[in-house]
Image (cartoon, rainbow, N blue to C red):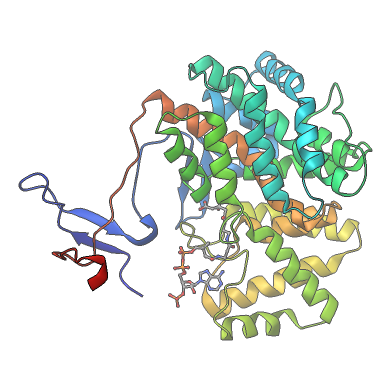
Length: 392
Ligand code: SDX
């Protein structure tokens, strides 16, 4: 494989311009400074604004993490109560958005349905194009509050059920499961889902976040930026992997295939195994470690041990055959499945949580904005002359 980092001469626009670096897929390129998160790919560590992900997963809620990402510090009780009130005030969808979802085909890709509905939200937000920091903060809260409602409403409508309005009280995790299922979740299901939301909230300049910052850096609006981010997350090399992981586990379960043999066959066919590998982590993604423990607990409690056993066998095979390790998408699939969530909603749920991270990155981008505009090295022909069309 071509060395991803090669030095190329500048474009000569300025005499003696320092050579720029060309990196396939921008691998290893540092595009900007950020205070939001740090990933050590060798050690397998992740921090959000100074707090280790293990500490956050054990001791905080999604609302506390969203506040941390947006404001730079964990909230005290008063600040947490305030952000919960703000989120609750924004949870109810504009009626026209329900009309948009009713007009969406039942067999639409849920990420396409989410992309369309989030984009349409801008029509019903009087401050959609207001780029003041205060308005953008309110939009961060609004989008994070409404994304769960869109996903749940779409799922119920495609099943011929009426959307369920959010409760006046309750966490994002509690309300999403309630709006989805029409009944309130138990404390364990709520806490399990809440931890998943903490784990998926933020992860540096991943493809969807970077796409959002590129759009925001043109001083376009937050709705345009997060719509682009949703499009990026949809891809199976990114957030779409969790759906593919569940399809793989279900195929193993249905066929009775030996998980290790199943994986070795995929590798022999040069296929990518979804839920494994990462551009930054070269060891186990710390989020996968936390999620694996959740899969073990849930599979014991729900007498569904096979999901943990298959996953462990696959993880061991990938490590021994390729020294490639699980990422956040591998074990999250089994957690969501055992919570009774349809696999094609796994990536929308990723977006539900990452909406907090995307909007935090936009608030950060706009604090000290500069257009993000890399270059390409021209490798096409030169010095061609146009000939009359009859001679072409
Ligand atoms: C997420 O960036 C983020 O932070 C993303 C994320 C977040 O929180 O936002 O962490 C969430 O998107 C996690 C990743 C989910 N995607 C998948 O699980 C899809 C499967 N993974 C691969 O496609 C891949 O690992 C990527 C896309 C994640 C990373 O790819 P890179 O960095 O471009 O690496 P590569 O494709 O060049 O692979 C390097 C080598 C290749 O072998 P060779 O061709 O050199 O022999 O590793 C192999 C690859 O074939 N490889 C895999 C593999 N991943 C890499 N082989 C089999 N299965 C895999 N999953």
